[in-house]
Image 1 (cartoon, chains in turn brown, red):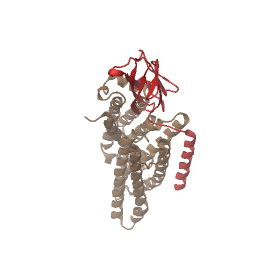
Image 2: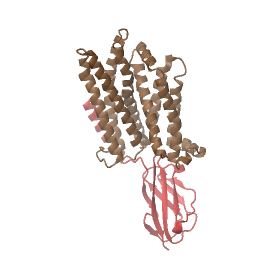
Image 3: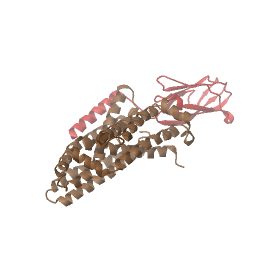
Image 4: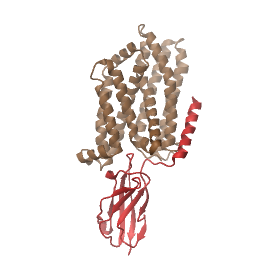
Length: 295
Length: 122
């Protein structure tokens, strides 16, 4: 049987990944994509967003049991009502969980009423869910004003990181819609806005990541005998790879669209998929080293 | 872009200079009676000082004496911004070496544990 800590890491991965994908996709479609095109992309996604929201909701429920087993004495405590109660009401983990559960509820309920408010509801639920992650763990390791500053920085980090990663998902059908005459103008506008917002998002992810490293680790992650530093270093390398792919897409492939449209668009699509894959690996790394000791 | 990042990075380093040390996991900094120490009288309480604040509900100690018998302890409490765990000892300790096994949940939700020994020699 796997130990509760490993199970918690896996649960964190599915939880964080589903929230980041939903946040980025819904925020991009809501704020930067023209309404008619956004509606079209939501329809193309079918039931995938709802299933992703269900994963976010279920992993929220499961995480309380896993946190209880981790904080308590192993699996025997996972279903112990008394221990669950104590974790829920007497630890910071429990307080953070309450906020995460409220956000997950908003997220799942966003799929119930008419399609009209769905995009905003998903963005609100997933955005709050990501922000609530900073209520415990390393984001809350300091005291006083520094704790607030640290949390604000981490919220900025997860929202810009999730915004970048999640927006890449609707970008792929939008690239295809460039070939549909009636969607072309709107798709072009959406891509241009993605590019502008993308520059800020990438810059903010890197800046807030540097600040976070300075706050948590207080040094550069160069001592790879420490698992925390080794995993953080791999994460930084992967994010550097994502950034290079983004720069290559924007400054090498986009100018080629005029000359060799089909091949350039295909290359941009593959580059974006590669960025998504790297981004998901990054989330997996954070799910693991986020609970390790930052030494 | 690079300029902004450099500036933010510098601001962060400056902020850290003011912030001082911080740990996400609670480690035992000192204890009374201390690790590997010898005391003449049976202690009435054990004080464990940690590097950061603890959660009382999920932090505690177990003390075993000579012959692996568990020592009876009172209700523990936290002092000094929750960084000191004070545990009353309910019985008089006879001569011998005692092992204190501690487990701690830091305020921000990380778990640590460890152990140390002290000797009572009247």
